[in-house]
Length: 404
Image 1 (cartoon, rainbow, N blue to C red):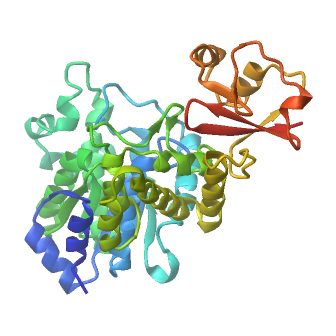
Image 2: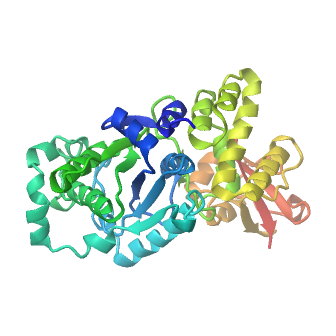
């Protein structure tokens, strides 16, 4: 069986590693317990978390044990990494709710049966710490000079870094120390923007426990132009079907740039690399086969096979010219006599009426295949076929109007 480290490299996950050779040998010698932390800043995981969950799943499939750590404690502070301003403060109730949402979603990717994985919440130890004891026991292991050299703090220096956020690195490092003590955790993984925080945990374990532990970061999910992937006009690409429908989710991956298809197939599916390379080598219109496979496989992992089939069928109906009565499309309730702009704004198709008016002026809205040119257009019974009608926003977003 190949070393899982080689699998991670081949599929394009690995960005940085504290000691590659030692970690590779560790994967060969024993069942490694490792963790990734997820701060509950929202009530759903998003596409940026997806790559981390996939890396975690590959390690579990190779026989290693994941710890999914939800940040009930660190979430009260907020990670300054990659931020130009301070994160919004959440209430304890919001944090607890978001943690519970994360746990349900993680179970789609990670097998928690028979002790194969651990679900933990750092509120269990961080909220019980005595501040003075923490300063004496852990604070003495950190130098301010070194902390300020970290990218996550340097980027905030000009705009101002609160003392609250300054503590985040110490808290995350303490998580690694605690997980090592409790579960024998020897590896922390995370996005490449977490490198400074991960290094802090590795060093804290060495100083306090005298143990050799490791850090590994995965590449962030970016497009070929370097911009973050997983952003839509409405915001993040969520893994929760209530926030981003399976159809919209499918369509996002079906429409990625040609240059990003092979990378996404490698990172976000379990397809063998031979098939990934074959699909990635397709050119011209043939690349659409690869995009369809990508969209189906990713949607199947996140939402299940049934939803993936519905989304695929819905897309084929729309783009195959079959009228668009697709079960998988996001639905918006409407009735004859309603103003179309009001219906679509209330249904979340438009963030505001202003956005809708601009799109109509740009000829970017169609109803039943006909362009809508009047921002005051009122729906009529004739617009509905079988109690339904299809609206297209821009070139790729489709919605189904369902008659009330």
